[in-house]
Length: 294
Image (cartoon, rainbow, N blue to C red; front, side):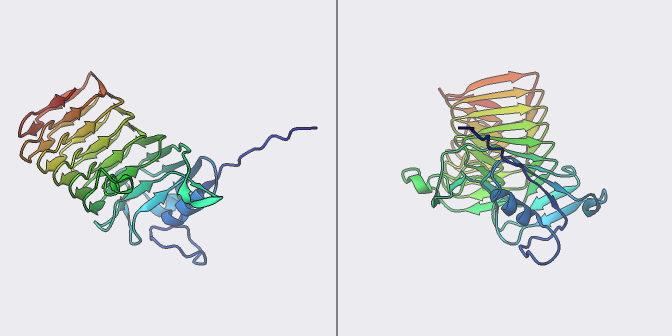
């Protein structure tokens, strides 16, 4: 018997419109339509933007239909973080990476790991509002991640991108800019700036990471804020796993709530490595630049 090798064909989609619509008959491809097509195409697909869409002048895609949901491995390559912003207009978070769905059981996600890369983009205007409930599995992280909520066990990679001006409001809500629980976060050179959490135990004004790894290279984490009691890590919270910061700057992050720690970085059991980097002007009501609790 001859065994036939199965080849998975990877797809590429080009965005030709700055609108946020889903109309198959309008002759254009929006970012939301491209993501939905990629979600229905198994494998690590790519999305790019038509050159004449940008014309070297800053453009914005304003989301009008809620967060952009990604459930398959995907690379979105934009024209540059100063040229294209995806703005949620404070109506939702910007993007939510979820676990893939089982086609035989579409109501339940699989445990498959997917990787997502966002290259040359600015993510802004994301907002979530509501309390999380740590004792309820389905509600313990639902409001996390104002800019990006990464629920995969794979890796979220930001390349030459900016996450800025995103907020979360709610007790136990974490990750004003970026949140990942089991998945890893990598920044190559990118910026997470001016994001905010408000609420008790609302940790990680810029980045909140659970049990995996965070790698920051030639990047900037600055101006992020915690405004809540017993909140930790205005710039970055890393609970477990590991964090490596190389050739980067963490500055001007503030934890302003009562009994809050770690203006720049707060770690619990994570292995922390800092190489050739600057931590400066980070403040908190109890401790400033870097706090380790283990």
